[in-house]
Length: 236
Length: 245
Image (cartoon, rainbow over all chains, first blue to last red; front, side, top):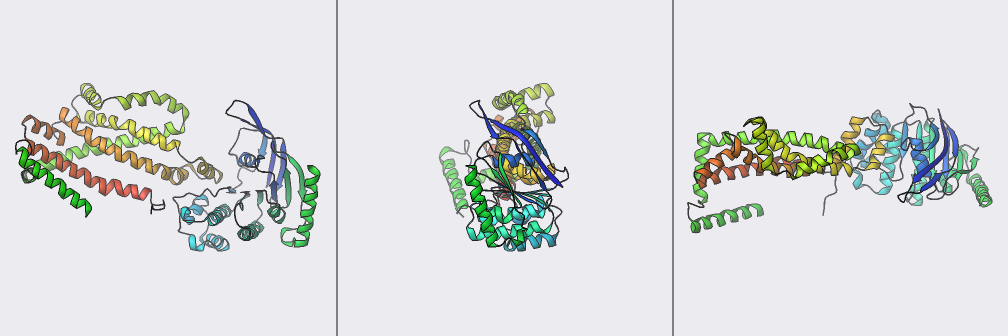
């Protein structure tokens, strides 16, 4: 499976009547088993890009092709759980085919076992984000989209969840698109990094990381980080 | 306990007032109770109460289901809202009496006319409430359902309906109280049975004990339905909300 994004432009009409360009031409492709990371400053149009890729926004110029049968798992910036359904029901409603065993395993990995019957209003933000992750993985997606899934979590928890995402992504071939502004998340999880400019967003540079995710040592990560820092200075 | 005390206080005030005003204008509680028992044992009370309740439930179900569907449509589809709005404003401001009289003139003094007239009176408020509820739906949850490719019915049942439930409950409650009031007028004007008819008869004979007997048993039935049906539904619809301390 392959996701091809070829957006040639996107403008918003503002309330005052003027138009505002949100996206410059952006094009990239993603294969099964790959993790692509979109990194860019806040407000550069990343979320708009995701909405277009997910088919939520059809008012744009260009083309997005994803296999029509591709199942999508999504982790939104806010957890977007149904407050009137329990944690388990939230997951099952999005993924009706999930088996009990699979669900139990996901809840174990994400440490949600104790919270199955809780309502989202009773959860902390960190727990709610984990439920959103469980929901996205439970559908066994072909395309997994993560929109800043670790934002506003403390470092220790973010680190653990990042490892869990890596574990879950490694289990089956899935096209993953991660949006983040954390360089650390990007180089630990990504196979290819797309560095975005400020609004209107375009891809300033594409950085592939050749070393498999599991084998990236701290030294290597340091080297990649330094490389990226140099690149970012260069592009300014 | 407090409720009982408050109720006892009401009875006491009634009794004392009856002593001052005189039995012709305000009969005492036991006098009214006697009439209630007499009417109940003859079966007339249940016949009239039953007729009224049947009309209420039919008109209520009709108005609620039609009103909810139209309100939802008007909240979702802009065109429907713009087309329906003038009608809605007309219906909202049409006096109940006009609707009832016109219904009887056009459709005759029939059961269908009475029920339709009652339903039409309740319809616009149901539409307005449900339209507000639909407008307040959380778009971000709609997007979630769409991304996860939830089938329409499942999304409606688990994403949309729980958000509408408080509005449906509010509309049911205000609607029920409206229907209670209007049904008696409709019966008074054009039905040969029901609590409204009996109250009309009592008015013509200046029979205050009978008037009070019927209206109070009717009020009691309303109270029972409120606490036994409407309130539990409301509590269930909002059970996921964290309780106020």
